[in-house]
Image (tube, rainbow, N blue to C red; front, top):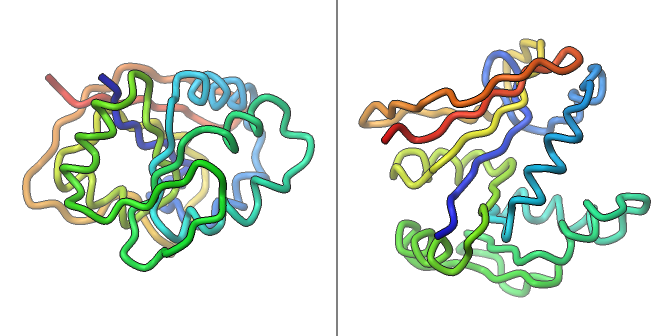
Length: 179
């Protein structure tokens, strides 16, 4: 059974929107972490806005090697009520109940199902307690505004910190749902 993994570039104040600001920092060997993360993944789950941004960039991006090849080829699932005809290969639009759709994906795949960006969707998944793991690459910047990963939730969620790693000026934190 697969697990749902939220993976984000995040500022100290929780902003994940438009992470172009991450390029200003020494990320050390964080790309190796992102590579390992993708190797463990069987599928991507995306919100419509993130999907549209990725679909506009990734299929034509050059020099991405095996990472880009896998990223483009793997199954992609977009939660949307408005997206009609996704053009990025291997894309399926999910329109049903979020918990049911995520449950089906977890049953369908053995590896991880990665969710990057997609702040609104990530918040909905967290609120519904559907997330198994949260991987954060924390950057030493306070942005002050922008979409944040964590919104208000009705019931507290306790997570277990299972790994920390400092690399360059970035800290990688991995949290899992507490059993």
